[in-house]
Length: 423
Ligand code: AMP
Image 1 (cartoon, rainbow, N blue to C red):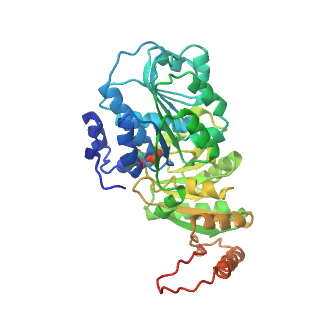
Image 2: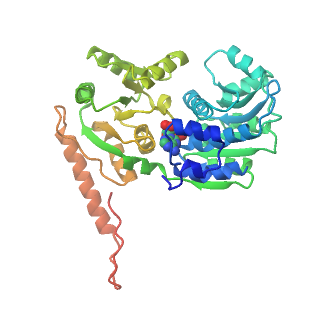
Image 3: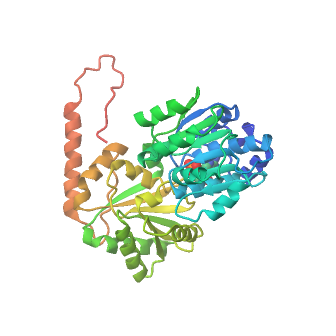
């Protein structure tokens, strides 16, 4: 977090009032850097992942703009368009606009697929100041003549890298071609790979680039632990740990990651049999069921939510104190994204990872990526000593290898030598 307070930022009074009520005092680094640039009307290329406060970084200055320059909306008009990859993120961004803009007079709408068209069409007909949308549904609505982009002033692309990963590039290009050339564009992405940069270059006009801590720094705020366990014992171990957690009373909300939708459903059944209040979100559930489960979770009526990676993408729920990697993530990168669901903003959290036979290589990759060994918990009834020994052996071999590869340079100046850590 930077030293500036929100009062150092020239935002309209109703926004300061809403921030005060949300108990936001210090802008996060992306907010401190991006808000002044956006207020000046410049294009932005922001490299930041969820958890950094990126939503407020673009939502506050766009709301400020609407407050300073109110205008009569024409039918179907959209003043600010925010494109996002998933329904969950769309709902979340819309909620942020609602929260930060509670004392500002503006119209907002969120549109995504999987739900009826009618309410979305009805709202669009009156025109909206801020439209948060997933690309597919937005194009559908536009092609049916319900959206007019001719006076759109600001385009926001949130999680642009995910939109590319999910194959939205053609839809995004079609939408962008419909917007006025004279506009402000805010481009946010967790990663800035070649494809992302090439898209950014083609749509941004002389942008200011703002980069905040890469994903691996998220890992530093989270207490991480790994449990070596046989696959057949995982449900028993989870039940055991959740019971202990509930008894100790030091947990609020718990998010459990399952690799598959069926696995998630099976696990929820088992937890319920053990009288643990749990629910699930994944692609086989209807949109209404997913939203219901998320609301119950947010309100703390259900304290354990089992999710697949896709369903949990961008999920931002306050009070997630524990994350369980019940199934190990298939890629090392998703480990950091998953554990970033806890320890949001200034909070702290715990991430517990179950590691079975088939996960040993990925665990090794994760430790290399986060550049630290994950503490092992062996004090539980389902501990698998063989796996622990195997892993410790590999860590030791890596350390030896790193030592052997280190160049043998003499430190003539007598100052400190730089040593690359094995982890
Ligand atoms: P985001 O990266 O936009 O998904 O935000 C992550 C979380 O941090 C959300 O729960 C926000 O409500 C919270 N947050 C964002 N900015 C701040 C801030 N300056 N102070 C405290 N919490 C914040």
